[in-house]
Amino acid sequence: MAYMSWVIAVESRQDRLAQFSRGTLLRATHTFADAKGALDAMAAVSFIPCSDVHIARMRALTFNTMSVEEMDYLEDGLVKCTSWGRSVGEIPKPHVDYVTPDGMEVTIRIQPAISGGEQMMALHEGAHNVLVAPSRFMDTLLDEGMSIALANGQGALLNAVNAPDPKLVRSLVHEPRKGMTDSDLFAAVRGDGLIAVATEPRSLLASQLRNEQILLLPLGAFIAAFIVGIVIWLSRNVSRRWQTWRSPSATANSSSTTSRSSS
Figure 1 (tube, one colour):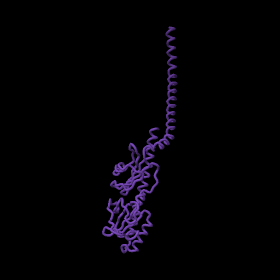
Figure 2 (tube, one colour):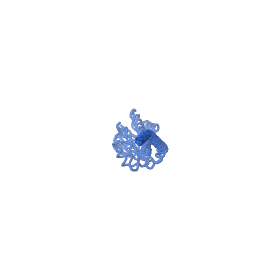
Figure 3 (cartoon, one colour):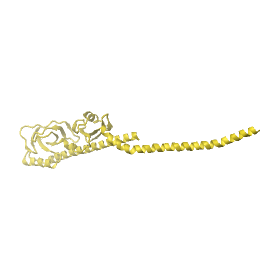
């Protein structure tokens, strides 16, 4: 039962980690789809480039799309205008780190040239790109001590929370699974060109193990006592049968000895 407590505790925590990995993957997939929807909506209508109507449409889509922080229009490899207005100076198109399965070009980190602020992820399709805050891909509450990472299919880290082990994340890219190292429990899930990895220290397993032991060790004690009781009962029953079997034989032998003595 102690061993079963350990196995159940480990599997329970790994299932919990897998649940968070699936939730992160779902959130990231939705964020990519949301951004692509904004780009598709922009491509569906023709505008005079960087006209007031064009900029107003980009601004409206940015405002109405929760995952998008900024939208840009590019021409000849340069940003001509954004949802903030017309650009000043030459702002080149950001380099492409990889391409998603549905054809969007992705720049994992870029510093917004117009608005400034924190680094963003750029998603490019057609003549427009959108900037998305990396936190949008992993906007979820985690259990205490849990870490989570999101990577693309090639193992490039898109975002991470609570600094998971990067070597462990890279090792799981080609073979997502649940498991345990000397220091961590982990669970990795793949889908739509992404992989999410949730980890937590093995030291946090103690509370889960105690809960399982509280349930299973008394059951183990009961089973052990039951088995001992059965053994005692069987032993006494066999002993009584043996004594009963021996008694007629002893009486017969005694009578035979007495007869021979009389003769």
